[in-house]
Amino acid sequence: MHKWKIPQEFINELLVRTNIVDLISSKITLKKIGNNYQSLCPFHHEKTPSFIVNHTKQFYHCFGCKANGNAIDFLMNYEQLNFLESVEELSILNKLNIPKKYDKKFNTYNLFNKNELYLILKKICNIYIHTLLQAKSKIAYQYLIKRGIKKEMIERFSIGFCNNQSNNVIQYYHTINQTEKNHLIKLGIIIDNLNGKKYQHFRNRIIFPIRDKYGKVNGFGGRAIDSYITPKYLNSPETIIFQKRKQIYGIYELLKKNPKPKKIIIVEGYIDVIMLTQYHIKHIVAILGSTITAEQIKFLFRVTDNIIYCYDGDKSGQFASWKSLEISLPFLQDNKSIKFIFLPNGSDPDSIIQQEGTVEFQKRIDNAINFSEFLFSKLLNNLDLSSIEGKAHFSSLIISFINKIPGQIIQFYLRKKLGLTIGILEIEKMNLIINKKNKNKYIIKKIKQTPMRMLISLLIQNPKLSKLVTSKITTINLPIQGFDIFLKLVHICQKNPTYKTSQILELYRDTKIVNILRKLIIWDHMIISEKIKNVFLDLLTKIYNQMLEKKYQLLITKERKKGLNINEKKELWSITINLSKISKKLL
Picture 1: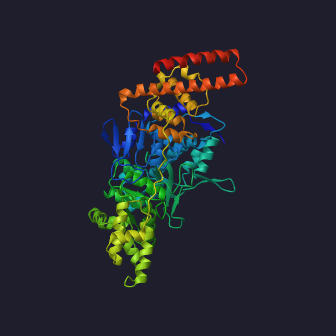
Picture 2: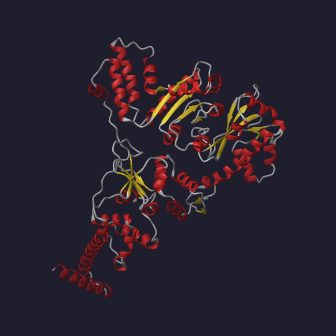
Picture 3: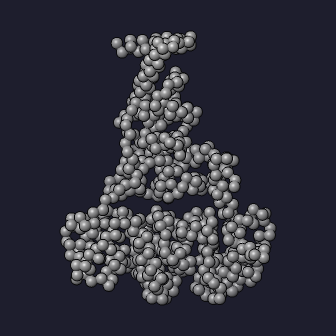
């Protein structure tokens, strides 16, 4: 396995090029307040904005839940990405290629391997598109036309065909090097059977490219055009760029037209997405499984505040709706909503839109059922509320669902609705029954304020202060807690005079002191900007004098016990003179 490391210089360049205000404002609404930008925190529920973004420091901080960090941290927390994925995301946004260097201790091979896979999938996608338009693929093309799909939609969604007769992908396979051949096999494009014969995984299938929000092809979905071919639908296998639980079909096409949709409608199939889009029903995407996943909900709720589920009108569709409700509840903040469209038995979005037309389907969207109505009706089914036992059973069932919801206002009204349903009209009594305490995972314990910590805090908040630290300070060698950290930070700031707070913090990622630095970065010292320099110098002088005193005491003790060599005597004499000068100033 190759071991590669992303150069620190590149990460610094990413942070320099990324304006954290622009990045965060593309996800949530920011309002300029003085020198900062403010918003409701995206990481916890709050009524009064306490989330601050500072342009100068390129740093964000929430005074409520204490979440903070730079652009990379924001993507990690908001998009639920790991460090490497966040770097990759910022690289795409800044249109930069990630460089790599060999490192024995660091493995990011998959990150760089992804780019090679994306390029290959793009070529394969083009082959499939070209194959569909060939004369030999007339049957496949006519199949799409008979399904009612217009040429415009075929082009918009880059629909293709894998024709086993033409073997265009097999021909491409024989023209590439061994590494690319291995990639095609890992990606599930080419299958190598026991006899060593190569054949196409998606042969005789209509191909639907599955793209991420940037338009990169992650994998494919194949739909058999012959009834005897099973299974009817086939997806790419799991790879480092294709995880079925994370993929959302149609998300690129949706966001390309509307980056901030007010709502998103979730359906089951590729053709459902295409047909509804063709009939001018906007904001349509599809999941790749029978029900939505937590990863898909997290992503979609970052794109929109309103999700509407519209599954097939059969038993499996009803089951999928209920499972989607259960999976969605833990992500239901007060500013989010989920609704449901229930189609007639035997119908699906594709058939119903062609049968009813745009206007009637839009009515279904407008009349979508709120999740609370669905939840109560589902749990009340076959329950007798005329008895105490029935009310108790219903209450215990629904309370377990209410407790999953993080939105406190939603919880309040669900409790009220429960009380009305079972005959307890006082909300206080219902609260006593449910009695759920919300805990905040971001709460961080306060740390004691000391002169050294305050000095470090001022420095990392104002890196240019490092110019005030002279060699007289940096050459003192004493084991004073925090002084070594301060000296390293001074060295970093002096060596890199353009560094901002966000870049300094990034250098300490995955170190033991990073959490302390995060706290020091957001300390409010209540010092006006014009006085920061003077306060910093005063603290520096105070600590320097304390160090002289400590060094003086160490030398005196040693002189009494063992005696001093000539250099130590000179040092003692120099410290005595300095302390004498300090004493005179104080007098």
